[in-house]
Length: 165
Length: 227
Image (cartoon, rainbow over all chains, first blue to last red; front, side, top):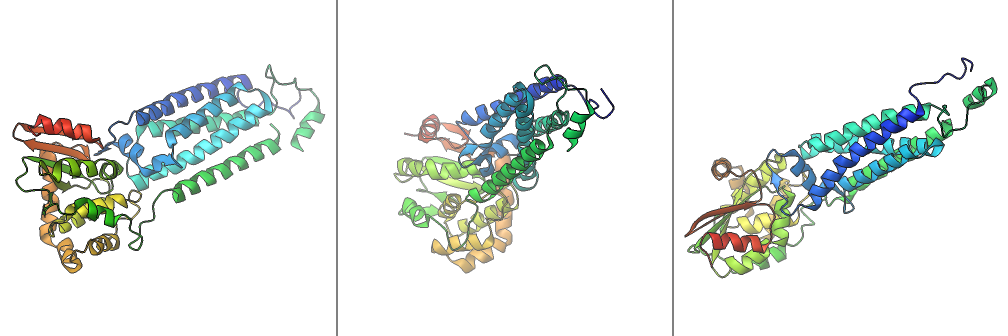
């Protein structure tokens, strides 16, 4: 292998495991938020209570779908991306993480400046999806590394040049 | 990874984020304007013929008093006003078994504070219940500025109250004092969320928080010695 095709960052396999772990943690957080919302027999606006206020806010739904459920879907997609090998897994992971970070940033803005309440569980999710973004970017930048599923890299300069085209 | 895929995934993701945000911002029932208030007639019909005095709806000698501590911006209070209180009023307040007193508190922001002061001013005209119920039925997004002086004035006008008097009261010291009294009353009753309903009757006190249905009211009323 020449200097023109260095292996950048951690290995694909390790990144996929890490992305999968973040996705599972995210599923736990959004699953918990979905469950307490679904069990919301007595919704109330709690004085100084971040999560209740946020979860009862009118911004907690998008066209009738609770934002917590959207979180579940996003982490499920991230998990699928971690399981899927190759180009499709990398593209799906990157796509999901960018959507997640973008929408989380908007929701955090709402918490801070509009709803005036912070929900620790939502913050946890925002941190998880930010970590997922870093991991999926590393995985996407990794090109076609020597992962068990990926095709082996031909050790020629031709491939490196083609990859840069 | 092929650069085309990276750019494609990122661009597609940004488009989805933009769509979600636009949907969230415009999808809500945010727009509350003085010219588009809804359900004012419904509110008037709901309370037609029931005596009102200050912050209280119902007959003065009703054996049970129900206090509602509410924030005008709280979505749970709005859901209670929309879904459960009409039945409570028909079942218990109209027949004279209970009377309802609204105690406006404000903890969700500036709009909440304006609303609480506006409600106290409406109480000066014995019309706090139609006032707060009309606002709950037209509630906008938290701290979006929906609970403006103009919207409250429009509600006052549509309810047929004295707008000039409401204006004076709204800006006056008495209402400000009442606002602080309500806050300390909430503290005394250990209110930690809204809506909180406190029941007082011959057999003592009961309380619950949240937008709960008629059966919760029946239980609490029974507990304090009613019906």
